Image (cartoon, rainbow, N blue to C red):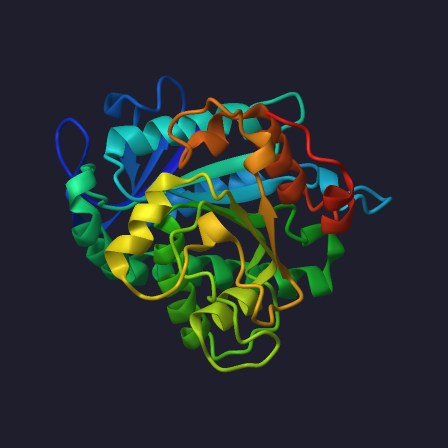
Length: 325
């Protein structure tokens, strides 16, 4: 049974995946170091889906007491700007070890890696690659939607065939911009509105998107924010004003809006009821470096991520006093 899972639209080379856009490819790794390209085996989309369905079918069913916080997850991780394939794989391994390969495992995590340039000077080209990647990610989301629709019909006839996995997404930095555009495409293709939530929990970490993304509130204007809010049961944005990378991002774009991952939601605008934001500033050590990515290296933030993905109520989380990192 594979231990690591990867989908990519990067070009394929002998020693790894490249920094240019190629066709979607599907990969699994049964053991070894996920940062080593030699540990990965390329498979067909059908083989990947079959193996993933078999793996999730081994998850325990939802307990009789309906405690959904212990239900296992099928999670997609989308990395951000300035990540080579090796860096994306290293971040993926970090997430797997801290959230999924624990005494209380969350389930299975799948890496979606796109052709981010891997150089700070490639910021604006990366934004173009992010938008170009959106249709490829939308194709993956479409396949997930179709699979869930089938499982929903099967469960209606036989509860024993109900899906045993929650679906969730962790998106970091500009990976949120990729997801934003992909969800709009997936929502449109599925003839909005939908009769099922595609994603149970969406975790937007240091999101490099406008902080008025969800500004239409409960109104349906067909915006990208509407697409995300409609496709997800709950959306959580983690942010800190200490993030210098997103300060540079806002300055480069000159769009007149702050970054969601630096300022949180625009408080002057309405927000859908299933969207909220959590300031992580007090959880990050005062002497921390690389604030933009330190979320994944900070135990208190990792603990928070786990609670959010498991579905702990936001009021319960917010009622706790912040514990300094």
